Image (tube, rainbow, N blue to C red; front, side):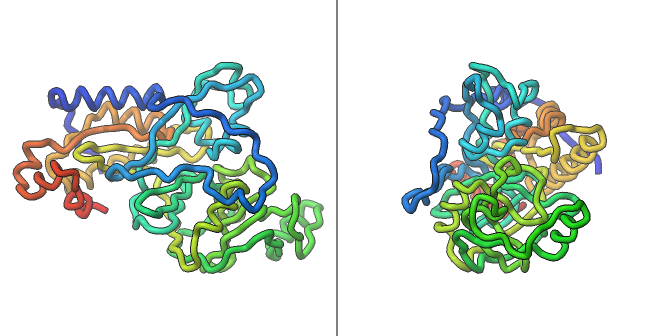
Length: 356
């Protein structure tokens, strides 16, 4: 499906939009955070969330921020300490060596999000961006997760949490034990709790049989395609989440590399490539998905103007950073009467119901 976009620029509103877009491009939208100390062993008091509860601004949450690296930092270490995935740091910081960024290098911390296009309740895992969203108390917590590989994909499902597990033992299925045997390695029928346990310190069992949200003894795999289908988190993150999530909590698993959201009349686009490398075929596939999604948006929200250049930049980078790409024109919205009044009062539920 071809994308029908309008390249006209609409006065001061679009000037403001362009300023926000440039902010996203350079990766500076907040103060530099203080780096937390290296995590110590978990204690009974270490069950709070490491990530903030972000308020929702329409369909968006969070902000970009920047950080100056130290000479000993790597992206893998920073991700573990700041609860960010390795690949999301790599994609948000093109041209910077993830293993030797250097002393004083300014990097972007990608903590600005368009919400997945699904129910905003409980847990939502978006496989395409390697992130877990936990909706609670009117806001959202966002965590990096490792997901299944192409050979052992994570399931697309609408499940529930059935049980919380502390210090879980791992009973590897026969298929995994066979994989080890084929490569000449022995894997026992049970691996007890401890530092060698692939399930880490805590886990949440799901109604999707055989699948868990769990910790890990290999933190580098968080935020990548690494598992046999389960959802892998940093131990420090699952330790807090496991005690925050109640039995019966909804767990939706979706695969949305393209996300579109509204903040008032602003239209935002977030595009994710799946790997560090970005091939022409991957770019073309994402362009087709973006084109179809924006064509659908124009049908559902008449009067939306999209700047093609901003869309092309989002697809060309596919870095997972939200970009403002357009707006719903005020004069068109005004024709809707009550809809315009609702938008002016900050209540754009009427618009959201049209396409979510």
